[in-house]
Length: 439
Image (tube, rainbow, N blue to C red):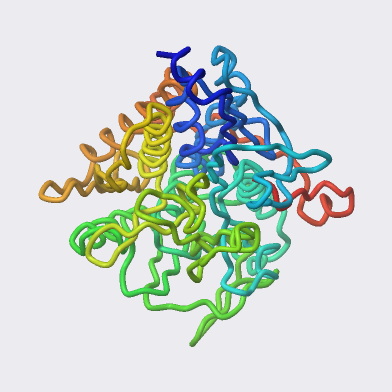
């Protein structure tokens, strides 16, 4: 079959994949036995397991537990090569991807560049309230959270101590809920005996959501249970509250303000540059509107998947920007390419199979929505852990993560409480702030 396809095509087709996230890796792996040459381009040399970023940010896991070298993932896949480079432009007519210092030709292009956090036009908030999309974001948030306790220990006034022990998370989606619960447990459990001048359990954790409830993707009854679980941990939940400003001193909103040294953003995402690169129609978040088979309108050899694409789903909703969806889209595109190589007919449109929604709220507390089946509490937490271990298989040794989780669960410990890295201002001064336009 291999030689038959190569002879039919005349030469091996070149498949270029932009981005080594869940969708890009799934597509590349599914093409392992195909008579094509696969090139994966990413600005970083590692694949990041984004669903667990918040656990790095709150010292449950070390960065090495959720990141794995891309070259290591594909070291045994002979038809795959990896380029670490920044994508600067895509020439659809010439079928070329322009990177820093080089051009990469393609026959088929899979764009899986993902998304980044959006401040809804208030980009100056980023310095004061980092989001949680990159590994650098997680280590920066961890540095700020841990440093806040250290600074509170040496505060000279009660007012300054309170400010340094106040943590505000903006956004009531899974990221915000998980961050708030994890910081509460860090303060109230893991660090409660670590200091002498302050009591970490006095920390104030505030979760602000602009909508009328948390976890809008979940049924209202699970949103209520999530809020109750957070409040049991000591988290203050503020719904129907729209943030108006964020600065070094705290967070302002209609009707008040909160003095806080540590602010964390989890309220929105956007897809930059793709509309310009592809000359494509996008939604307000910058996601590219694609055909039912995930191709770019007018370009059958260009596919956009994962967080970068807008794909209709059901009840007026789009396919959610979560790892299972991206993996399904990557595998679908790979199967479509294989079908084309065999001379098959046009495949059925992509159909997303939703397995459910999961969100954790600290130790042994979570909510799970599987349609007719809805779970909360310890059962949902163990299910959440098992699901993440399952998705780690084949990317990162899941045993390492399981051991860390078990240790934290049994001994109420946070093993990765290291303060490292520079502040954003220090990075800019050293020319190390590398948020660029690449994949």
